[in-house]
Length: 368
Image (cartoon, rainbow, N blue to C red):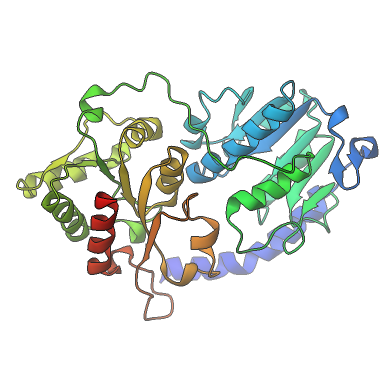
């Protein structure tokens, strides 16, 4: 009850906070019209670009790698900086197209912005659909000459806006939306592939015999495969003489250990040394098929051109287009949907997909 009341209060206060935030931070002291040309950046005058990925989303960072590569391909001398956070930073740790990585920490935004402002970035690129007050403040304090944002036409803080239904459609795959950003840098034709660079990707004990990778976990507990689902998928794969390798975040290792102890008849391998997303990426790279309820793993598997079976929320999620926007890069990869919720306010359960459909998809991918 207390949690519900708190949510109601926060929902009421949010627009008030955002309005106050805009009055404080939606402004630019200096404008640089000489860097703009027909609502695009004049790349002949640009030496540095800063990308903001302070949300810490691994999947989004994977997709963003196409932008870093394509910009460097056309403009090799451009300095690319990325503001990152958490595990998403590992995705670009060894990326040769990124010159500087800035570690974003809550509560220390102004300190980081001051450091960035000294670098005099020509262009700042933000991908947020909705800016929180601390993000508005951060962008303002970075003091880039040109700010590019998503649907920010009526903002003073932004010089260029990527506009829905003008530059992209809301049901376009996310790579096309990012392509709209690239157009602002005079890049029309681009490779949509993602990049994940792995250093010392050996893990011999994992690579040997790894055919199918199964990721049980999603972004929330409602998007985790439960033990019944895990057992079902592994049994189907075992019936096809396929051994399964499980991947996980380090905090889930003991949970999966218990699952294996309780299901000793299953042919499944649990690596004991997964320390982070790059270790999981290494395992995925050396597999042939990936099964997952999590879109970040979908994007990592797409980066390595793997076959994918992914389970998504029903009806395209809250806005009806999640499977189109955040789906696998290759449309040939298979998406299953779980069942819709029956009650208002009830969370989806990713485990309610059709088991026979899953069985058929697995058999089809193994035999293809």
